[in-house]
Image 1 (cartoon, helix red, strand yellow):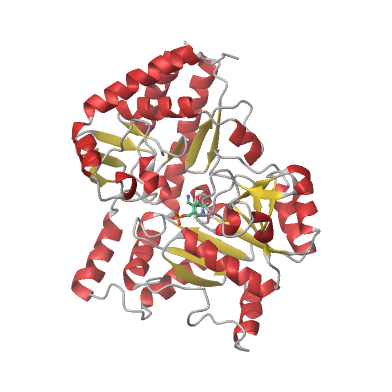
Image 2 (cartoon, rainbow, N blue to C red):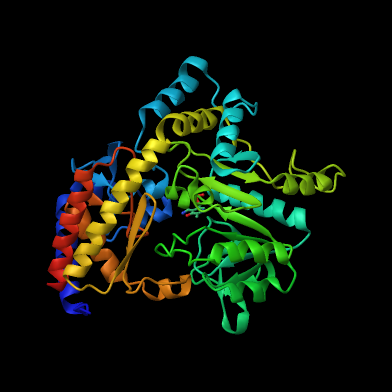
Length: 455
Ligand code: PMP
């Protein structure tokens, strides 16, 4: 296995930083002018750019982004999944324009007929019978977590170490010594110690899950069907079935977050792998880029919740802590309808999955050629490389494989050669507009930047 030569990596990174800086004067100027923005950017995550400042957007369509310095990129980041349908897909744009212009009424706190169409479509794809809308996956998780606690009368949420489910207080936990649960490093000012709200377990380790469930205080296991926020860590055979069985045995609900794993197919991993969640969450992509999210619940969960709301003990119609003013608005429901009906179709998923397969084979070929100690994992239309071989089996193992310098080098080197990868990941997502040429271009550039380091 080839070792990484750190001195060589430092030289290569510094050369890429110089190129980036020289080629993006306008982006740099805008960044320097952003003095009224916290961190100089509209949202602090946008500072996750290893060139010292972010690219500034000029325009984007399909899988192409053009920055303010006039460079056009093949975009495999796709807004970290928000643009899985491609940038500004025509059917979504038309539906949104019609709602905003011709029809009018962006947000009125009144239901629209589109919402029922979307609910029926989500049932067709993911199986959950009842749906409610939000404006983000974070909110969908937050509200579904509250409903899970209400339905079960239990206080804690079980999560896997190094998972991510949005800015939901209960979820920023990792495993500590001797089965304890502790705050994840970097967690911003948790309201209470994490072991008050949460039980953390290790992905692919059913015994660790059972140890936590045995305390009898877990309302729900909240999990992605595959971890996607610490590289892609796939479930081993039997793990997801085991989770379902343990949840039922210990009286906890199973809550599946498909915000990223929707890439697995038209009906997400839930359909692809026959999962049986009690609560289900999705966000980011289903509105074609217009803010939206949704949670689905089973009839049993709905009955348990209304058992408490009918008596007036809990309030879901007003200020009880579930729901939001702009959630389910006419604009986002029109966007979801058009995106699901005409863009993220079964044919689109077949195309995207075939391309992600070719992408993954291309990356694996380069890793084999140069004997690079990394691995690559694919989940449907999404592929990600990680600096560990063999591929990590848990969040803890994957976190240990993190390498800031390698990460920075790869992202910058790709960007300087016209390819955008998600800043938080080495993740590539295909959209309906991605072509085989785009994938081959990635493979060629990947070979070039890997060879510069390992040849
Ligand atoms: N769930 C998962 C699995 C996610 O990856 C994310 C965001 N990366 C979220 C929820 C939260 O999404 P948002 O930031 O759009 O609320």
